[in-house]
Length: 147
Image (cartoon, rainbow, N blue to C red; front, side, top):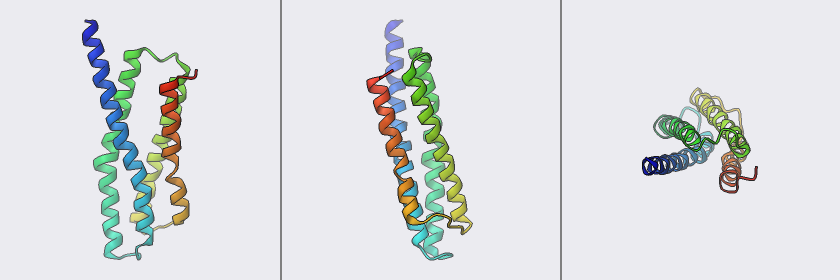
């Protein structure tokens, strides 16, 4: 029985890491697409292609990835019985922030699709740093477990 639990844990962990990588790749790519989209002339074929690319990235990569990250992450926390550990609370807070960022970026894609361009390319480039900072903090929390 111990062997089965150990193998389940390893498969959950592997799946969680794989889908975190997919999710982060998408979160790094989306603001970059927004920058290029905003540089395309409004109403052009090029802008329409970016709308399609952004939609596909959100629906095909980002949405399934965020769902699986949460499902597998919760399963890992249950398997480890880690709910009382401070590092997990901090990690969950950061993952909630990243999930909110994901939602915010999905909303921004809808604005761009309607022809609205509220942010400058510079601001979008700065927003592109959010996932990198968050994931660096999350990795430290999970590996070091400082509290």
